[in-house]
Image (cartoon, rainbow over all chains, first blue to last red):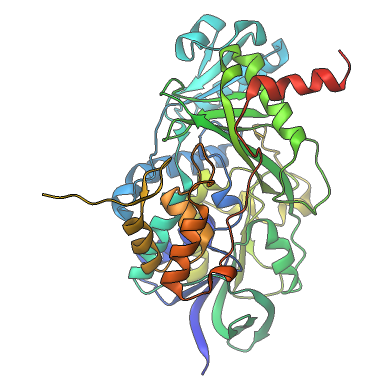
Length: 380
Length: 95
């Protein structure tokens, strides 16, 4: 008995599920999503839930702005409460250089009507009173950014899609991919699957999966860690970010502090392990920025990864040399927040429609021409 | 009216019925159950509830208890204040 599908999606993370959702909205339901572990096991269920439009390229701002509008409506469409709270993103600058960088970004973002405000320390502590003003000289703030709780969104997508006939097969690993005259034959841990079209949306594993199609995709996973504190009464409305060291912290829907910090890049072996150095680094930063937090307890820490591309921007393209196969990866730590727009783009590519946003800036060919615009606001 | 609720996870208020209904909706993987219900992610970090969850998973799926995995156990073993963790580097560098 052959398993067949019009479209196979490798990866049940937010990119794969969002693409499946956009496909279903276009009337395509013959979709199988393949996941090697539990649902959305990778970065999608390991991230901090930050959603922002404060980026430094036109394309990223457009995708993020559109995605934020979608997040506002998705809860109702999916009947899933993922606690999207637009409490803003507060960036803190420690030096004049950093403040100049924030001013430049805010001016650039003004062209897109983002309303990013540059703030002095008094204005910063009007928003978050507990911050120690000896640790920064100003910042920038945009109210429309915010945080959401990833799990209910992912499970909401999954239930919505399954109810409409999309098959999501967890614990089903793709072991090999063979091109046939009609598309692709995937050999999986549950037997073969024939698909006319294929999307690789495997997060940190995307380059590895694409290599089964003979393609060389220039992205690789880099470990990042996060931690959560015990629950506290609500006191922190925005996501707070420091430019210097990629520190970020927000208060989740259950009152817990959730945050991370950039660490030295390691070898590719330990994507999801957690280490003590992170706990110390993170705690030090929390206590220095907000001394009142020193008695608050860390409950747990965990590892995840960014799938990093050479210019910290996504790769959204056909897989070279494999007609009918597409790849969406390299999100470099901001895949979740632009996933609704990415889902639209990838769904359009898969069914041959014109996407609402030009995918040109995200093509693989940009790495050949050398004309890449590196995203300037990568956090963590 | 008698309301009967049997709690498995006292930190996150997860009941036996809620767990059974989530598993019956198809989420038989312990990591998925954790992520949907929040079980084991509160202040006790699963120390009270993890094995009760495994038992319920075993009953619902027919998988023997010994073959039901635990969730990934995360450090720290017990909650530790940020101030204490932040002070560790001072010791290490001999300041």
